[in-house]
Length: 80
Image 1 (cartoon, one colour):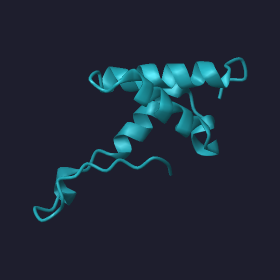
Image 2 (cartoon, helix red, strand yellow):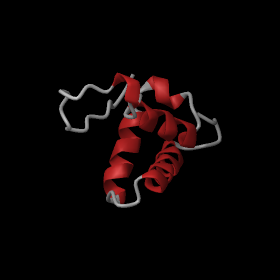
Image 3 (cartoon, one colour):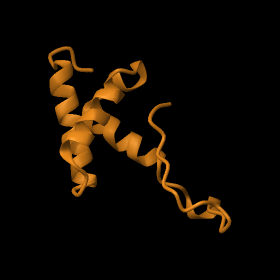
Image 4 (cartoon, one colour):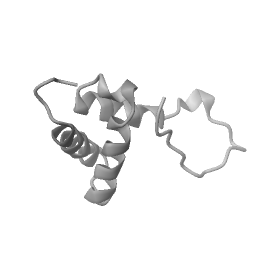
């Protein structure tokens, strides 16, 4: 995390980037997610926008890996 950026600023910027990808999700839910991310050292080392994008990419599967018998329930990992 940028040493000039507070945790609150990081979380707000991360939530903003998440909102760009998920415009229909309630902003408070995205802020809650951003706070969960910043509480983990792995994500703290990143800029907030980059952390948001990497977290989102964890939930995107490659179509070659998709199995027809797999559940349709979306499950996104929260951390590494």
